[in-house]
Length: 322
Ligand SMILES: NC(=O)c1ccc[n+]([C@@H]2O[C@H](COP(=O)([O-])OP(=O)(O)OC[C@H]3O[C@@H](n4cnc5c(N)ncnc54)[C@H](OP(=O)(O)O)[C@@H]3O)[C@@H](O)[C@H]2O)c1
Figure 1 (cartoon, rainbow, N blue to C red):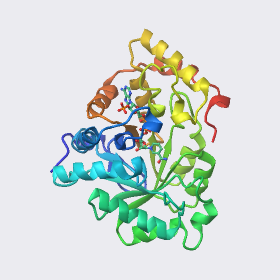
Figure 2: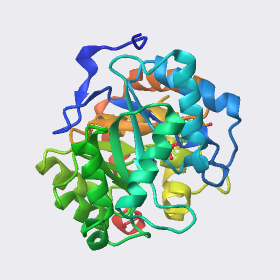
Figure 3: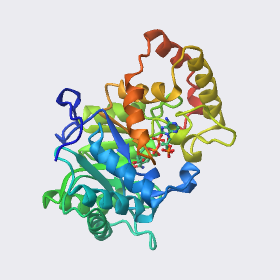
Figure 4: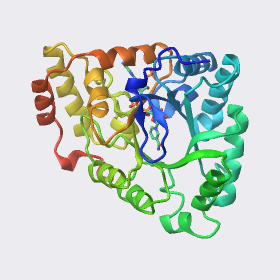
């Protein structure tokens, strides 16, 4: 089986992992029904249909985690994979190991159990790209690196050939930089920190590039605020961001309206055009979003619009800065 459009010319290498992917990938967080983050639930049917479209559409990366929707994201993606008779050739499915939801444990043994749970739900025995997910808040970098620590578990899975490559996926930029500098990881996944209204990840991107890691930038829409004109009550980055970032999104949407460019097109292309980023992950909870993303990539954005967008970026004090 092959994906509908696999334009070799548009494939990018994820740094030293050697994995190839399209410049955009689909994030499986909203399709798992995470109302607290996105302001709406996603039905099982919509979640499975979104995963089917992600696996057969124009992009070749689908990202999920053990924890999204308490396992629902992986279950729905697993159902989609079974419905299709397998993962399309050349397609990458990435997931992440998470802390134990009950005990909070996040050591080697938990990493191995988390991997087993994920492969069972997805119906796969090998994961192309396996990330350590959001260690911040659960364990220190020293604990992760220590004997019987989480990193030992990930390396064991890679050495056994059960995980193709391993990555570090998380928010807190300073702490994630320390993981990058261990040089154990093939890929970095950062989120919400390189967008039209935030540049917190600037130094992190430099460090990852210097180590020839693959770089994935997730959430170019800041969880949805930069995908359409902001609405009252909107929060940037699930509430991690500042009120000024939402105000800036409003100003940006107004400016782009005067030149006939959808804010979602500028938000997506802002990440895709950055040379230090290999691929950009967008979340979707209905199949139409995936074809829409292809159309957003096709919108022409003149140089002078990028200059104006730079000027509309909030000052550094208003970024997430963490
Ligand atoms: N720590 C981590 O590892 C981490 C953190 C964050 C994200 N990620 C990964 O990156 C992926 C992307 O992040 P994200 O999903 O949180 O954020 P995102 O891509 O910035 O935003 C997703 C939201 O934008 C909405 N949206 C997309 N296009 C739209 C449009 N044209 N008009 C209106 N709304 C639109 C979607 O709405 P609908 O729901 O209506 O489709 C969805 O709720 C995640 O799914 C996950 O796989 C990883």
